[in-house]
Image 1: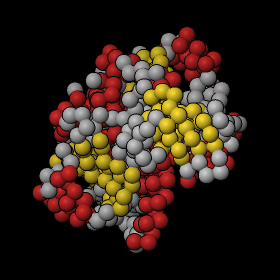
Image 2: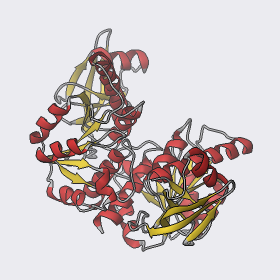
Image 3: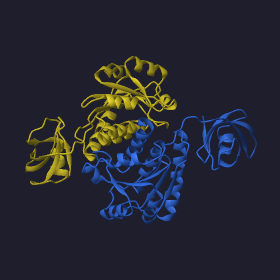
Image 4: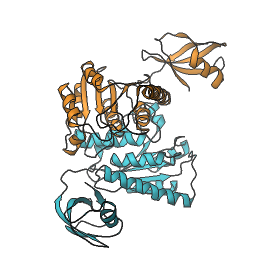
Length: 247
Length: 247
């Protein structure tokens, strides 16, 4: 069943216009009596039935709330140093399926990709569209957002989180394996975790120092060396396994 | 440091010809005194020093064994119903980084991709090359192999494994969450786990029945619906987290 993310708070009867109206009436050619899932921006998801369609709006009524909790108990933000090519697309598509709530992209010191403000804006729009499609497909109850920020802004934002982890290749090489488990154990429902990943070239010693000074903790993700786009999949899958299957 | 997988058992002094010889002498232009990692087909990995290079062989001597254990304690085989496009490439590249030991590809009943024997052989070669590159990059101590098989062969092989899981979307939808944890708890070092994933269209009820009759157990991978190529990443990351970080 089709899934729509609405930029408004939950209400049992709702009138929809704009893009979702167009999609329901023109693309899907839905009619009165058809059912869809609606996800509101306060994480309420309902099954709703179409009660009326006209040229500029669709009126829907709640049938029932979606029962299954589909969101991780903690909110995970993935910050990626600009990687090359289409890797950010992959991180955001798969990361959305795997439960991330926010994505930040920042120019890492070893990033090869250089995107000017105009290109960043265009890419950000494209990436948000990818997040939306993946959120629909994976039945999310939160629509993840993608934002481009500077490294300075990233570091300044550390204080907004309950924990900040730095995925560091050298930690993996040295066999560091306690930090991720400890952090997941310490976080409680609705707390916020930020995890920072470097670009292909990794994080520089300078970046590591700045991130640690700002409160970030170095963290290994198992003994194999993961590519920049694979590491976030590991982190998110591990968090899901820990919170959603083991507990 | 460059990493080479050798199709022979461990020995402290080794003469290498063929492809690795070509790569060391011609591509990397290595000379006497240079060091590389050698991985033998009995999972022994050593740091070795080049003692001699001539036109058809390189002679190397062990410096030390690689200390860090990089392989999962259990051997995981990922079986994927033929997916569309380049998804198998992605599964094998990332699945190798994440620790899988074998990959099987089979024509699922809902597979859209149809590959004849000739195309399968070519694709199998290409996929083994991708596995090798990913194994080098992620510092594996096992070179994963990719093989195309029929569904009948897949089912017949179930008896070779200590546990067989069937990743089933409906299990996720119904909130099944105990099977994966139970299975990981039960398996002990060196045991073998097979996990079967459907193509984009999912496994058919007919396939599910046959797999269950042959001893496969249905298994959910968290409450979000994962694409066919994302589900193996979840499984492998969860196994790594469980065996390598938690225990």
